[in-house]
Amino acid sequence: MDNKGGILMERFELGRLLGQGTFAKVYHARNLKSSQSVAIKVIDKEKVLKVGMIDQIKREIATMRLASHPNVVQLYEVMATKTKIYFVLEYVKGGELFNKVAKGKLKEDVARKYFQQLVSAVDFCHSRGVYHRDLKPENLLVDENENLKVTDFGLSALAESKRQDGLLHTTCGTPAYVAPEVISRKGYDGAKADIWSCGVILFVLLAGYLPFHDSNLMELYRKVGKAEYKCPNWFPPEVRRLLARILDPNPNTRISIAKIKDNSWFKRGFEAKFAKGETKSKELAPLDTDAAFASSDTGVAARKPELVKPQHLNAFDIISLSAGFDLSGLFEDTNCRKEARFASKQPASTIISKLEDIAKRLRLKVKKKDEGILKLEGSKEGRKGVLSIDAEIFVVNPSFHLVEVKKSSGDTLEYQKLWNQEMRPALTDIVWAWQGDQQQQQESLVCSQGQSL
Image (cartoon, rainbow, N blue to C red):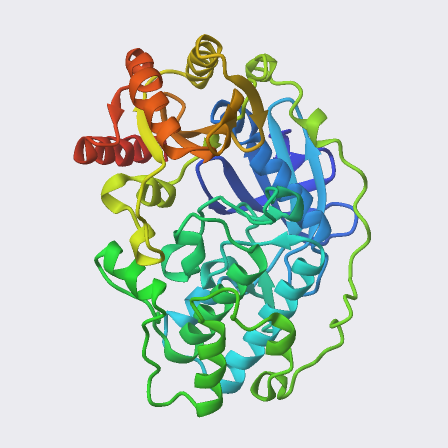
């Protein structure tokens, strides 16, 4: 960035700071040629490279380039230097919808208008294979004309992110707004999870408070899992019925967006001029996102890529994975655990090498998978087919990892014998704490996450 006169790339005049996070700052700016107000998100490339968030930034770029809709904050341009990534974004003057709700419940027609625009934007994103996964009033902006704008696609997922079962598997979002199937960590449909969040937002707009709330996180999850909420007496019957269909804890029977848009309460006063997917901005110029991250003044980008890219955990993930907060019992019957977890202070490369060495000694084939997973397979048929074991590595912070090892196919007794007699003892030198040491491990995981934020 050229600090002289606050000019960026000889094209934008930078103004006041609008907000900042761990890896980025957002400034108000003016296009010197057109005088148009924009917001510029400045991402520190060195920081995102150090913590391995390159893919997340690329995904944010990809999703925003696809989501060109009047109720989605527009990405006009992406620029890069050796040390920074710049997102040139639509400037939304009115601020967060959260600030309006914080003052109290909204009138029914106002709440309906925002809900209509939210559903329209989400429907459009889904039609482009984009799932937001963190819908909440803090990520919804309102412009000077009182129109809603969806923003913050940092946790979004593309359709290509699904595994072979067609489901997403990353636990993310904000607990009070997140769907039950996301918490359960058994895979979920991104579109149906977004619909649930829209329902929570509708409740908040009309009530002025959350449908699911509790100071005890486990109790909050229990309420979410059973869709245990109570509508205030001022909710019209038709809204109650609609919410009951949206906040359905079973994603298979939860109402679809198409049926929401066909609801009589929803359709009242609905302007459907963008229902067919009209867009209001031109196609962005092609950007080589790999090239944008290819060089760095610090040389961080020059590291040799690892066989498997570990997934990054947030505090929400840690709670879901920690043994003391095992939520599976809230959603399904569990008779026999087929996974083991341990924490390690070793780098991911050391953990991967160790697993490969063990596999070689036990004559297991090593296959790499996406999303931080090593797949180990037996060389011969067992009682129930070939034994297959998945080892998934999660990053809490650069010096602290959580590893989950589980049987994905084959005979359970064969797996347990191999694990208890061969694999677990061989891992001792890289293990800092096993899952069984619940309190120590959980406290250390949360503490490590806090230090990394």
